[in-house]
Image 1 (cartoon, rainbow, N blue to C red):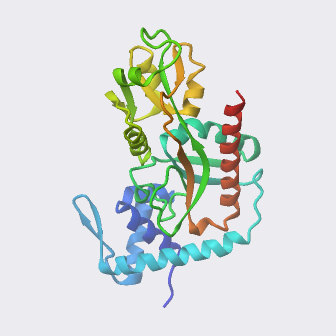
Image 2 (image 1 turned 135 degrees about the vertical axis):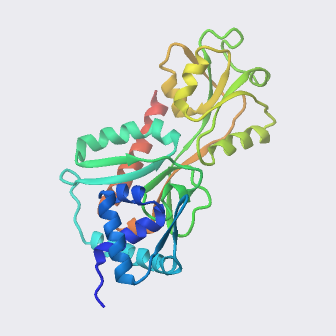
Image 3 (image 1 turned 60 degrees about the vertical axis):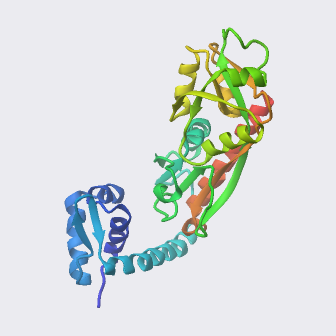
Length: 305
């Protein structure tokens, strides 16, 4: 029996998205074109493959059994073919999908984009939310090229590389009525705090560090991104505990003052993870090296200033 191999990535994408519109967007084709491809798949495999339901598409038993096999075969094929290709960043044209957490997006992505503009202008980036777990990011399936942040409980098919360790400091407004030259533990506990709740495990890390050191916080407001913090701090008497490199950036704002945390809160890791299918991909390896270099340079520059 002859198979149209061009249809196989469609089947895998439909299984991951369970939605024709989203799958079409990911594949870069129109929705009618994807519907036509699905009909051809059904004819080729003699199975409906997906049953429409109120909130999406439910795969049939055949689809459930076929897709893992097809996905593994496509990954092996990519591994072999891409591993044989030369990569010239100055001439390359490629779209990478990355899932950085809000810390990486704030601290590293501007420098990464600037570096790409200089040495690989044809490389484009698409950023998607880090998500609450690795499955949501698409990193485990390999549909997302890379996840960047704090990675816990990584499965066997995800390669994780350590980029750097980051500490914590505190920020208050410059004309704060109580905080002038230093921030004591008693003052820290008496203040109200702005808490950042990015997706992933960094939230738990800070709460655990405070608990282990017997330090309490009165959280007045929780926000979802670091960008919201300076605007709130500037007009309140609140305090925020933030990563060192973000505080280093906020130190340029005359409305704010940065102080060391009243006790050593330790560090948290910043990591990069990717599906094993990309381990020999020359373009992917090059981008990983670039990101690693940017992270190291960012830390070195912060220590020198």
